[in-house]
Length: 295
Image (tube, rainbow, N blue to C red):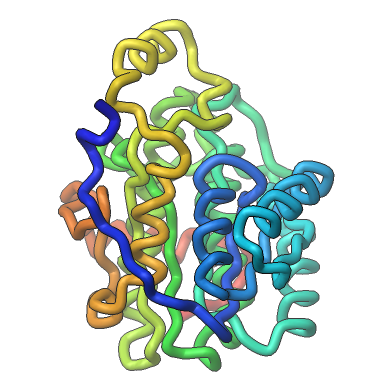
């Protein structure tokens, strides 16, 4: 039944000589994406918070792919200091970055704050990746043609950006905060595409499908029940990784940028995901919150 979702896309595209960075690749779809791209000959860097888990994933990626050009680096997206240290090391050690996959995420977790005082979901899912991309952008541009892929979710379509209270301090609903962060991913990818016109760097955001991974650990009773009854439609991490892989390697996509994908095909995001006004305001707010200037 799970094949019900699969648009049979496959490609023998090779990535020899390319460098790929994937955040949160020690588990779930990130790890499966890393395995696939490693098999294609790319140098893979997995950026993870938990170095013990990352080391286990690293071994598995190397064994599965037969490619030992894989390394892990420590990155905590909930801490801008960690993001800056990571980017500094990456820019120093790596001569190029052809594919950045902003994959790490937290989902419907209890209210919490990052090291910088952001609500956890918007902090990790959006602000963390926004800053990471900013700090690596010069290297990515130098490596063009290059791609920046941001894993969103269909949950973005239930979201709205609360510019007055981006950190949900007045009231917190974990599902709304998650949807807001996933809408922020779509808007970021959309805005970034415009800023990168003519550079040879293209952007993509995507819905991986409803995937059985560790992300569901905070789901409450009703949501867990929905996950159970929709089990026939739930993707394995391998299936869930396919759209990320598609956006990373499909040659025809080099002429597309700022678009949204699902099931290995370009599809429409919500109208909120195409709102240029909100996109611009979110961009400016993100720069202010992170103390950066990114025109």
